[in-house]
Length: 241
Ligand SMILES: *Cc1c(COP(=O)(O)O)cnc(C)c1O
Image (cartoon, rainbow, N blue to C red; front, side, top):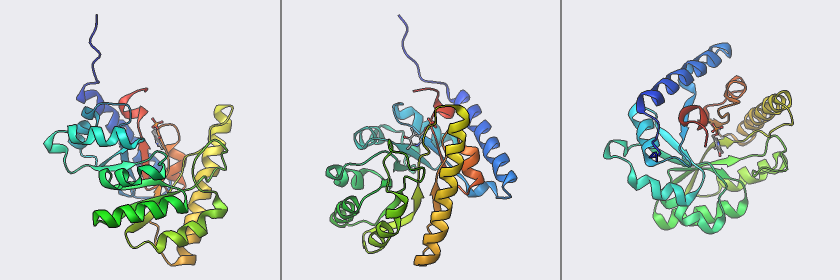
């Protein structure tokens, strides 16, 4: 009988080095400084050690998909990992807003007015300003969460009225295609759409919307080409889930 073991830190560090090199190359090709793109380690389904590895390597934040999983894992990390930023990147139901506001440093998956209302109220009760991103279905994927491109201006307008929320930018997930070629085409189109939307909203509303959270293990290069400031990577760091 074998005891399941988590990957060794040295292997994690090698993978992170390779990713940073890939990010640097993609940035150079896009004439962007590599410091503009943060690597967010996606620790979902992995033990708290995954977050400890990210902190030990010098990464600033981790992404979790579920409120419950994140709030259980966070208290298990080593004291040295205490400065890690925890970001919620998965779909959030409004009845979990209070817990999300309490246990996460930023919510990337805000996609409705109802959620804005709930999170603003929760942040007010906690006496904190909660950073958020608006999740946009920039690839028009029927299977994905996220506000429609056409709804985005209205949602942004509402977000800007919320005293206890701080709107940092936008997030998206590219749809899958039936073939690798189709998936790649979807990714490119989705990321270009989100970048164009950000530029349009920023100028119309006079806000910076600095953060563009887009790109995962398989599509971080086109995301960086389109202007991503944060790639969310799980598989390439920790292996298949
Ligand atoms: C799981 C997940 C990721 C990471 O995906 P990988 O392909 O493992 O890099 C990124 N973003 C979101 C929203 C996720 O749910």
